[in-house]
Length: 229
Image 1 (cartoon, rainbow, N blue to C red):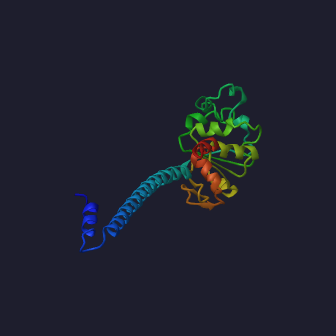
Image 2 (image 1 turned 60 degrees about the vertical axis):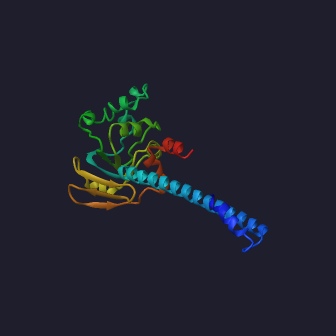
Image 3 (image 1 turned 60 degrees about the horizontal axis):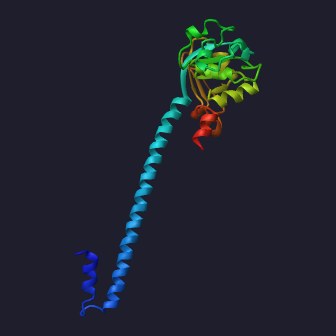
């Protein structure tokens, strides 16, 4: 026999209370049980949701660490490296970034594609990325394996394009003056810390604003927009 029915039967006994009162108590007891079950179901759903959110946040933290904590060998250039030097216009009949990466820095540094390794860091002087507004330049650098560009300053449009394609860039004249070709360099774009691991010198600059960090971590503006639809 169902416990609720047994309870109602016991309550309806003449020695206890009237049948109508017993029925009312039984009805309220059923409603109470249903309410408790609903609260339990809602709590379970909330717990599942929180667990999923925590798992997703944990994965994002891992991705964030990989994107924002950068270590590589310095490849150093001077000032006014323009977008035609980064990727010559004669190759722009292709939009395949892997193909364009084979010609990255070709006119400025013919040895670049032979010696660049995934994670390497470009260190350059003033006005890096000047010239045309084509976004192929930062995309090409990223596709070649460069993890970050540290320069004394960037051309305005190149700076915006770099963020849009998810290429971390840092302005720090002091670091550029001290870092030499071939030095091992560490950069944390979330804190603004740069360290020359070869010499032990370090510098600190203003880190990315949170919304820029989100764009870079997502892999670019388009990727971030898709994530937040």
